[in-house]
Structures are given as C-alpha cells and as structure tokens.
Length: 401
Image 1: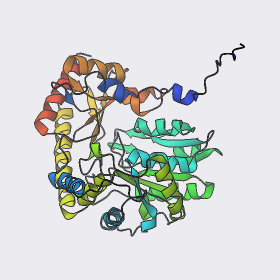
Image 2: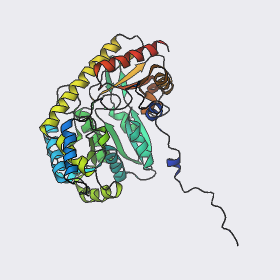
Image 3: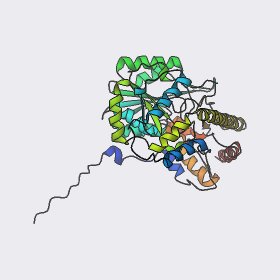
Image 4: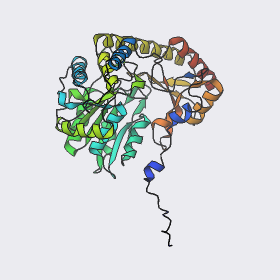
C-alpha cells in the first residue's frame, strides 16, 4: 500500500499563529484574582452592575426570554439607544442605523469587516487600546499609527490632523479614533472631527469612532463631541459604543454599532454570521440601563471617577518622578515615570513585589514608539481608599527604580 506524502505546509494563517497576548494580559496573568492584589490594570470600576439592571435580566430569564431574537437586537433596546443618543448628543439616529451585534469588540470587528481586505491598512490615533490594532491585524490589515503629542506646557494631548493624513495612502481604508481616549483621556474637538471627516470623504476612507467613554467627561457636558453630530446617514462612519463602562457592565459583553443606513440589511447577515446576535436576556438588562435610573447611575459613576481623578492628581503632586496630562474624559491615568524605559518589566515587577496591578504603556503603541514605554496606565474608577493604597505602593516602587 502506498501512503500519501506527509503534508508539511500548515494551513494556519501566519497572522494568527504570530499573535501574542498584549502587555495588559501578560501582566494580569501573573496574579489575576489573587485577593491581596490591588487591580488597577483593567478598564473597569470596582462597582458591581446596579441591582435594577441585574434584576431586569433576572426577570427576563424567569419570563423565559432565552430564545433567538432579531440578530440586530431587540427593537425596544434599539429604540432606547436611539433615545439615548437624542438626549446626550441631540441627534435623532435612524433606527435602521443601530445594530447590537454582541460586545463592543464585536462591533469593532464588524466595522472592520465592512471596509478592510487583506493588504489594506488602517490608521489608529495612538496611544490606543491594543485590542483595536490586534483586531485589525486579524482582519488582514496593516496597522499604522498617528501619535498624539504631549504638550506639557499646556497640559494637553495635542492632535495634529495632518500627522494622521500623512500616514494615509492609497491602501488606507479606515482611520480609528477613540475619544475620550483609552489610555490618555484625550478628547477630539468638533472642529477636528469636521476636518477628519472632510479628508476621509474626499478619499473614500471610513471612520471608526470609539465613543465608549462619551458620557464620562469632566467639562460638565452630557457627552463628548460625537461623529454622529457631524456625519450624514450614509457617510462611511461607524460609531462604536458599549454598556460596559458607564453602567459598570463589563462582564455582560454587550455594546452597539451605529453604521451607514445603507448597510441595514447587511448588518443582519453579519450579526447572524458572527455571533447570532447579542445574548437575549442581557439585552433586557441593557434596556433597563437606559432608563432614568440608569442615567442617575451614570452620574454617580462619573462622580466616583471625578474623585478618583482628583485622588490621582493629589498623589502626582506629591511625586518627583511621576507626572501626567490630566485626562479630559474616560477613567484612566496615563502616568509618565521619569527614568523608566521598560514599562512591561516595571509593571511585572510591581505586581510581583508591590502587589498592585497596572498596565504597561508599551501595550498601547507599536514597538518602535519608545516614548510610550515610559508610561503606565491605571484605572481610577475605584474606591478612593483602595486607590490611594495602590498609588502609595506604586510611588514606593518608583522611588526604588
């Protein structure tokens, strides 16, 4: 009997084979769940989801809401999202533009699938959450970066649209902008949005706008500037949002996407193929999050974040080697540590020896961005006493650098 020759060529995509955990995952894996750790590494508050949201999901379970729903999301939730945008950014979003595919990361992937083919590129304004550029790579795109600039004199992150435009070329299919940003808290202005939109319209480039932290802003406005306020119904603009952050629902894995109206039917197909839609009973919990009680909770969480930001500022004022650009939104401190050149090594040693978890700055930028390697990120949406203890541990470790 003649045997077939052994196949030695792998069918696995090299892009997938070469994936490695980002720095946040690498550090957290060292001590995740250990009770003596003060975990400031992830983007979540220490509050559990409010009981009225949990109760709504429980009622949905008790009522037997465990079957398939429309892959684009239940209509009452899509209507409530429409009302949310109306009261926060004063835009009446057509219901056919709203899809709830699952988690916000599923919304990101869905948007990428709409515009990116192998060999294309996407340009990210950075520093940026690493899951974004890893998702783009998984979709076959080359990822390019347009870095924000630190202006220590004014105490602002500076966005130069021309820097973004200079990185784009004929293969650029999308730009990704997170505002308020993770990890910096930088917030894009309305004028900057218009300039970017005009550029992208003229060149056939899509905009992916991460507005997950839109209501977590410290200037008194109900929402940071949104691309929904400047884009038309069928502009190639995808606005990503999530219940995870403002409503303390990180474990629920439910978010939404506002997309061009022309893609309403295609979104049904894509949601069905990618995830069969969001979890049914979780959608009923999310619906309750958009009630007046949910709005009140968002206000309470914002105040918790404001206290955390002030607590972090007080800590930084006491330090000689740590500084930051005070965030305009979101709930992160992106802390610059003088003399630190290996943020992953520092964060790893910090969790082992000081028992406090932070995210290394290197996770939020390409490997050749050595400036970002002098940063670490913390989440300050925490109990003030525990946050203070974590910061004290951090300060002592920096003193030993």
